[in-house]
Image 1 (cartoon, helix red, strand yellow):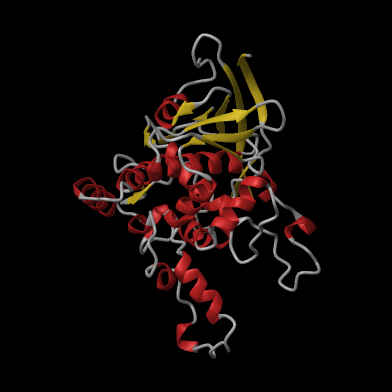
Image 2 (cartoon, rainbow, N blue to C red):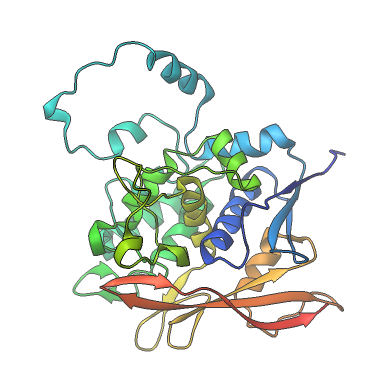
Length: 336
C-alpha cells in the first residue's frame, strides 16, 4: 500500500473566489493522477486547502506542471539557449498568437481551446462535433473527461446566444471587454506554469507574471482610477497577475457546468438570478466525486453526522462593461 502525503496550500485563500477555483483546479488535476486523492480546508485561520494523496512533493508539482505542457528537458534547453545571442525578430511573425508555441507542447486542454479565443466563438455545430469526438476518443491519458467537463462548463447547445453561438457561462468574465478573451487569456497563463511557479503559488511566495491578462475572478482585479496602474518603478507599469493561480482556476471552472434554464443559461454555483456565486469550504477530507456532489448542493448540505462547512458568496457585478466579483461574505456555518 502506498503511503499518503499531505500537501498544504496556504498561498490559496478559500475566501477568495479566484483562489477557491484554483484550489479546485488543483484537485481536478490531482484526480487525473490519483483517483483516491482527498481534499479538505484548514478552517482555523485564513482558510486554505490541504490535499492528501500518494504523490510525494516532487511528483505533486511536477505532474501538475506537465498537464499544462511544462517539460523539464525543453525547459533546460530553453534556459541554455537564452544565454546565447538572441536572434533578431522577424516582422512577419508579429501578431501570432499562443498556438505557435503551444502546439509543440503536450497540453491537457489543447483540443478544446485550439483556434478559439472565447466561449462565444463556439457555434452549436462546433460544440456538438467536439463533444462527440471526445466521447468517441480512445484517450489513453485519461484527460478527455476533463475536456468534456470544460465544454459542459462553457455552456450548452440547448441554449444559444444570437443565432448560433454558445451562450457563455456566468463565470466567463473575460468575454471581449477591454480585450479580455477567456480561452486566449487562459492559454497564455498556462504557458507560465512550472513546478517552481506551483510551489510558490501553494506556499504563498510572490510569483507574479506581468505579461499575462487575468481571468478577472479575483475581487482585487476591480481597480479604478490610479489603482488601474501597477508599480511606477515597472517600465511597463502593469498590474501584476499570478498566471499560475489563474491557470489553475480555469480548471476549477470545469467543476461548475452550465445547463439551459427557463429563460437563460444557468451556471452551477450561481443563485439570485445568476448574480451571486456561492461556494463551500469543508473540514473533513473528501474525494473529488464527493466534492462535485457538494458543489451542486445548497447551503444546508451536510457531510456525515457532525459536518463542518462554511458557505461563502460573492456578488457578480458589472462596471464599465466588465464583470467582477465583490469580496466574499459568510453565508452560514454548519456544524463545528
